[in-house]
Image 1 (cartoon, rainbow, N blue to C red):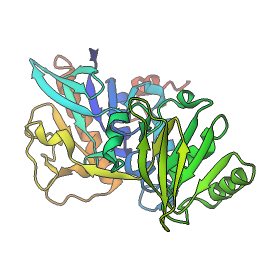
Image 2 (tube, rainbow, N blue to C red):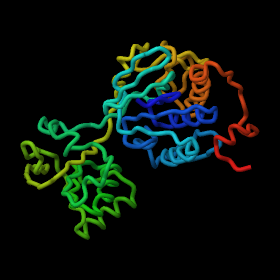
Image 3 (spheres, rainbow, N blue to C red):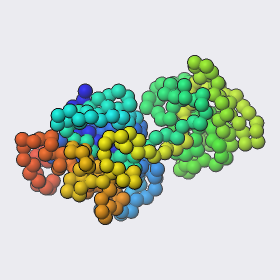
Image 4 (cartoon, one colour):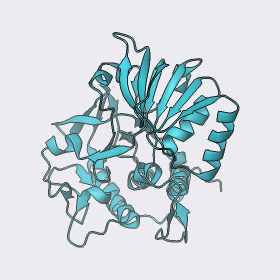
Length: 338
C-alpha cells in the first residue's frame, strides 16, 4: 500500500501542473496514467504541433510543453505509475483506497481526476487469436525495451510511435515495419531515417499490408500478412508491437459513483470537488457553467483543487497563501539556492 496526500489520475498537462501546485504547498502525490509516458493528449496526439494559447509562451509544441512541466515538477520527486489504469476506488475513514489494473494499491485523503476526456486505450488488433498473446508477445506499448534484445519484431502502424520505436529497436533487433498504406505519417527527419535503415538492411518495410493471422499455439511463432492485391506472406516473429493509435473511453471512472453528465464530471468552482468529498476533477473531464476546454483553464482548476486537498491532508493545520516570489518555504521546496 502506497500512502500519500493525493493521488492524481492522469499525467497530461493539467495533471502535471497539479503535481506542481501540490508540491509548492508541501503535499506529496502519486501520479497514475494508462499511457506509458507523461503528457496525455499533448504528447500522444500533437507532440510536434504548435500551441498558441499558453500564457507567456507565444508558441510551443505539445512535446515542449510536457518537457517544461516535467522540469517544473522535478524538485518534488513525485512517482509516476505509468501503463496502469485505476480500476477500483473505495472509501475507508478519511482515505480513498485506489487499486490499479496492475494490482497496486494506494491510499490518500484526496483524488484529483485529471484524465482529459477519459482514459486513452490502445486500438487493439481485431484478430481473435491476438487476445491470448496480449501482454506477453502482442504489445501495444513499450515499457522495457531490453525485453526485445536480439529478437525478431513485427511493428504495425504508420505514425510517429511505430516509426520512432522501429528506429530505436533496430539498434539490437530484427525489425519488420508493416503499414496498411504506402505512405507513413511522421516527421520528415524520422522518415528519412527509416529509409536509411531500410537501405542498410536494418529495417524491412512492408507496405501496403494488413495482418491476416497470428501463428502459434501457446507461443507466438510468426504472422501472416496480406498485401492489398491479395498476396499473403509469412514472417517469423517473436513479438508483435501494434501502434494503431488510441481510443478514448471514460472507462472505470463511470463506476465510481460520481455524477456524470455527457461523459464529463460536474464540479463546484470553489474547489473543483465532485459530488464525492475528497475527489476532485480538473481539465477537460470536468464540467461547470462557462467551462472552456483550454489548458490554461485546467491550470487554474488544478491550483484551486490543490488548496482544497490541503484541508483534507492536513486537517490540523491552517493553510496560508504565499506568493512564490517571496516565500522562503516554497523556495526551500523548490530547492532554490539563496
